[in-house]
Length: 276
Image 1 (cartoon, rainbow, N blue to C red):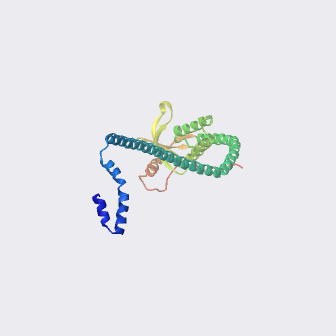
Image 2 (image 1 turned 180 degrees about the vertical axis):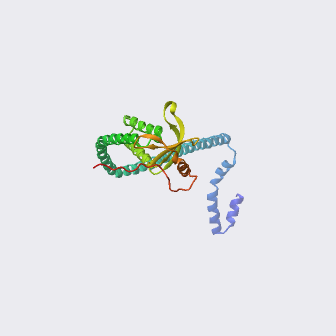
Image 3 (image 1 turned 135 degrees about the horizontal axis):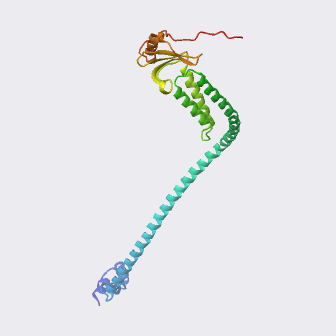
């Protein structure tokens, strides 16, 4: 009798039952355990196949991950572009809404401008003759006035006359320059001025010092102070009168701001009786 069976027979009945049960469970597994413990001839080939399969699986997983990363980058790029386009669309829509709100007022302003343009055409037709009359009066006034600064004033008149025939000068600019010329002439009426100029024409011309006191008097004196005179508005000629030599010097100091303003002595024409 085998030794194992002898030991089992020596146990009591419950022990024998447990031992038999364990033997029935373990004995069938012994050939499998022996087979697993024994080295297999094709184990290296199986291991290499397993390693190759695992490497291929990892490569496939890496390729899939790269594809997923690429798709994610493309998705993020498209999302950014979509957000940018959405923002631009909202901005354009807001701008269009603002223009839509401004459109009625702009249409109203255009209507007002059209009315003003029609009025400007009418005003231009009316203003042009007026400016010509103003300029004619201005030219005549300069000719009849005291002959001070003749070259400067004649040049101003000639410039205004030439301007009236120019198409590149607007009506408003023409009117402005005519009014400006009138204002300059008005300034002459309440200012005192001293300047050097030519008295006489041709061979008789000589340099003298002129003194203008408003439009009340226009006096002169030679540079060597040997001769003093004034303009006779009635006779339209220069009159020599050395009695005003001292008055000229006093008035000249006031004009050059070298003396305090004082009572000025000037030749004034006596008033005349006008026949009714």
